[in-house]
Amino acid sequence: MTVALDTNVLAYAEGVNDTGKKAVALTLLHALPPESTLIPVQSLGELFSVLVRKAGRSKARAQRAVLTWGDAFPLIETSREVVLMAMNLAADRQLGVWDSVILAAAADAHCRLLLSEDLQDGFTWSGVTVTNPFSEPRHPLLNAMLRV
Image (cartoon, rainbow, N blue to C red; front, side):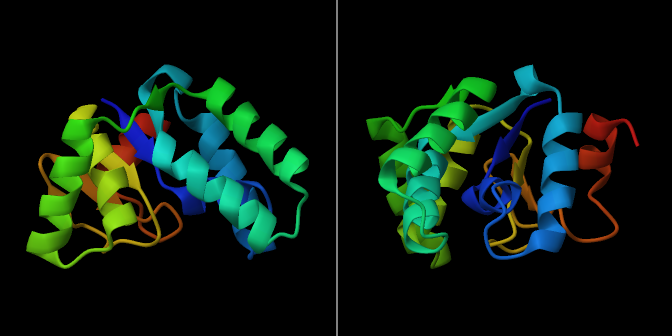
């Protein structure tokens, strides 16, 4: 089983916005199997923006953080097909296009879960279930991946 990471999970791990969630995010990221945990390229682009705009980091420092995450986990590329799926998803479900790109990339990579605080917890599309990793109780599939 594979899981994809939304930007907010990485941002919290970087200490942006909520220091309480930083520890949860880091614990989660260390417990997930690296070979089964994927990052959509869109998430890395958004993370760069968040680190510069919200966290006030220099572009060079934000770039180093993004490259480190890209080295830590396999990436999901944003292909033409992913963009087309995302536009359909955004139009059909009234979602933002960039959130739709991340969800479509996860579906294209055959992920079972997308860890995100931004999308509706429990929303399932094309075999991918969105789950908020910061809420309790955790989704049973996430617990299974974490061996909890």
